[in-house]
Amino acid sequence: MTDNRSAKGWLKLVLSHSVLLASAVVFLFPFVWMLFGSFKDSLEVVKMPPRLLPSEWKLSNYTQIQTYFPIYKFLFNSLAVSVVSTVLQLLVCAMSAFVFAKIPFKGRDGLFFLFLVTMMIPMQVTLTPLFIVFQKLNLLNTYAGLILPGIFSAYGTFLLRQHMMTVPDSLLEAAYMDGASYYRVFWNVMLPLSKPALATLAIFAFMSSWNNFLWPLIVVSDTNLLTLPVGLSKLQGRWSTEWNILMAGNVISFIPIFVVYLFAQKYFIRGMTLSGIK
Amino acid sequence: MVGHKHWARRTAAFVLLLPGVSGLLLFQLIPMVSSGYISLTDWDLLTEAEFVGLDNYVQVFQDEKSLMSIKNVFRFIIGYLPLVLVFGLLFAVLLNRKMRGVKLYRAIVFIPVITSWIAVSIVWKWILNGKSGLLNYVLSLAGIEGPVWLQDFFWAMPAVIMVTVWKDAGFVAIILLAGLQDISEDYYEAAHLDGAGSTYRFFNITLPLLTPALFFVITISLINAFQLFDQVMILTNGGPAGSTSTLVEQVYKNAFQNHKMGFAAAQSWVLFLIIFAVTYLQYQLQKRWVTYDR
Image 1 (tube, rainbow over the protein chains, first blue to last red):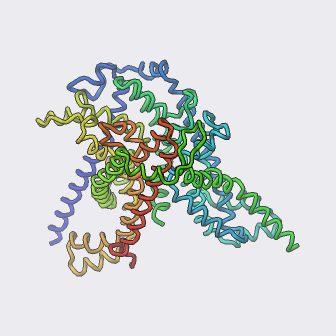
Image 2: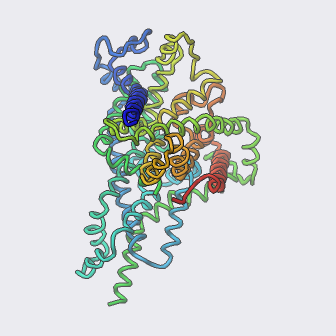
Image 3: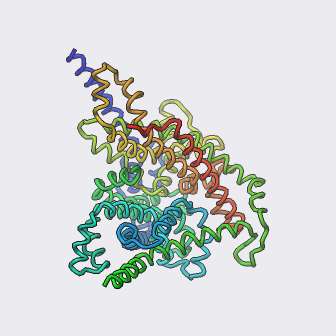
């Protein structure tokens, strides 16, 4: 009986491993293929039958790409936009969330409800007027134009508020008793206590800003201000056959988000699940 | 003293809310309201907008491209949703097992999720290439002649579906994994004592208790599916012959390439109403299949 069970257990284990291993290959292979492709020359990259490894490792794709598109400028733009909008989003959301969680005033719940409502507005509906607002404010083709819409997140406010509600009032009261102002309590007590929630939001904000396509596509036309996704999409439009160059561009856009992922993986998966269902 | 504190509290609330609320007004509510107005006008951004009432909405439902894009989105969902749920559930169950290397597998399954749609689409466009694509080469080894995936009127949408399932399966799996880990061991122990087999346990314990997580995933996936855009722009640009054209792509092209602002706004409202209706319907139907009692 026990023997039988463990044999079945082994079979299950082997089966699970083989399914997962096969899937891991399917999930990873396009990235591996992209990486090796970025070192091939323009003929080898489309050669049939294909070879995984380049016969000669060419670094030139990574330098040549610059002569057609300022890809390293795009990289800088993407990094600058993502980092600045992430930091500002955390600050703005935390400020609002603190009020919604801990500073009662008349009409607060109504205002919070309004925040929740905006979460349901799809981006496409506000797209055209938003473009016009930015045009009126003279923010087309500016960094501010790229960054500003990413700062205000009802979702982020909601996430942080949920966390801040769990911080006991007595902790804050003690600080107020000592004569600390609301701002001081926010900065010196609430923010440090909210680190895990802030970290979760930071990862989300960074990822969505880094991968954002539709808004930068609309707000920026000046080549020097393009972010990586838009830059890459224009690159592929013009260089539809030079896959080696395109793959070099792809690798450049993949590395930063991959590094963030490696460092933040634990938060990433937990944050994804926590903010999802609960 | 009390009065002062009251005053300080109101000031603090005002100051701390100022950026958040003004952002909300300027970038969400005002555009939302003006979008409603624009959709009732004929406007090319340059000349004065002309009020035309519901004309644009009537046109949306007479415009072949709009209708096709709506139809395409439903075609997409019919293919995409079952596949992503089945694979997501399979991975969630496997990744929930206590075995060596499971953390590494979890990390790998998630890598496509974090990568931008643009980078992913470009790689897949290369792999799906008709003549020199890797996929057709692999198929040829098995003696199958693959189609010119992205330029084939029939195969372009299945290709878009396949790539999207590949990218999203990890997301679905992670959410369902969290759901699985929420299920108390007690249920399984009780069933075990009753001599229930693993198939019985899966269908009578796991699946019913997982329905809230499934409901959540389906809601999110549907909302995302209706907003299909990034991958389509790169993979097919809506083609061939509009067979992968989507509503968001139509909104984008009409507003920013054809400068038909009013028409585009009306299309975006139609999209919103479809999403709203489907989500509402789903919420109504959830009573029939989602089990909340634990």
